[in-house]
Image 1 (cartoon, protein in one colour):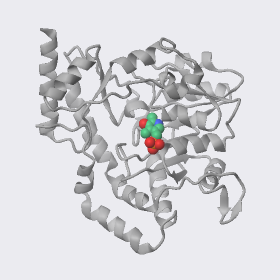
Image 2: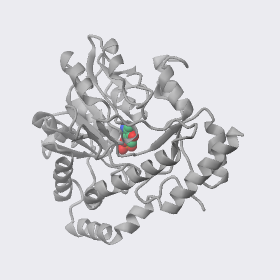
Image 3: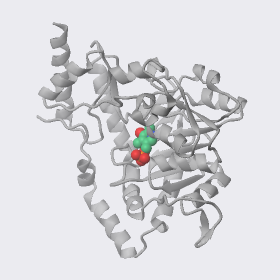
Image 4: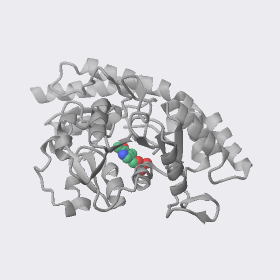
Length: 370
Ligand SMILES: *Cc1c(COP(=O)(O)O)cnc(C)c1O
């Protein structure tokens, strides 16, 4: 049996008639930029997250970047980011000309360690960007308290956390604003690129709405130097089909995570830790081991896919050579990047494939203990 890492087509097949009807509805409407479909999705997603406003944009990177632009964060300003994240979190900061200031994560949750944030704050710091990595919320009450004390904005990177909860409240409603990605592989994914910003701040929402559409409120009247970053109505229509199924799909991810946690509880792998205030949505199921390469090779031999999220931390990427951070500069992030591997997980992973993965993994671990 072959176990792919993620089967995106399975989602299409589960709801094919509804997706096909949504496609026909948009094509028949004759309206192909913004409009009713995007507005309807924005309202539905804001209601889902528990925020007053949602603004659909072209992708997750733009969602983060446009909030920073709207806050007029730019050259000379600093934004605190996790050292352990997908590079897009950092790219949003450098895109507006500001400087990312990395803070190390808690090694058990892989999320921003609140104890280390204050030491990184300088007179130039404008915002903190916690990332709800792998679908697990960051410790937001503590991060928000530090931000309030130092008069900083909080921008959640919720690109991996659609539907996850922190003390009962959803990701996207936990900071001053939040950026989401609807990249196909995310928990709520389009059939192409998409993104959104959620916030309770009406003035920010209005500014981002202009910035995503050439800085314009009224066509051909431009109040701001905006960009073209609009959520596509076809993608909005597809997302409207998927959104009512998100909680159910996240529940299936949780059941798979539970199966892995139970089956691997006595293994030498370091398993994910969930604090009692967190309800993660298991965007990824990530384990840690110093035997990563050998275990992944064995899984490959058994036709079971695995991935690494992520092999190189942002500060060691050639793209950030200008920051002059060498190996050893951020040791916790580097340990995580050297040891993590992700197991297959998704709302459509068949039970047989889950079981085959567990068997292959157990064989691999026994093999290496001999
Ligand atoms: C996917 C992702 C993004 C960027 O989203 P895109 O839609 O691909 O631009 C940002 N941050 C994190 C943590 C992500 O996983």
